[in-house]
Image (tube, rainbow, N blue to C red):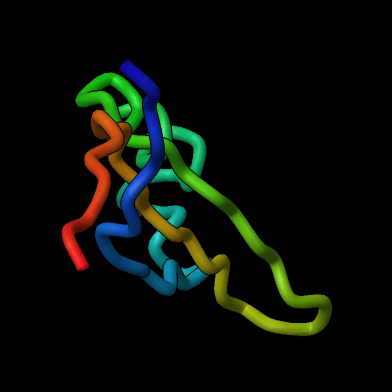
Length: 63
C-alpha cells in the first residue's frame, strides 16, 4: 500500500525556550514518536517554525 504524509499541526518555537529544551531535543522527541518534522527559520526572527506530519496509508477518496 502507498504511504502519504498528513499535516498534523504547526508550532512556533521561540529562541528563548532554548533554556528549557533545544529545538534539536524537541525534534528528536517528536521523531521518536513517528512524526515527520519540517523546520523553517525566518532570517531575523526569534522563532523557529515546525510543521508536524504523520505517515499514513493512502486511501482513495470516494467522489
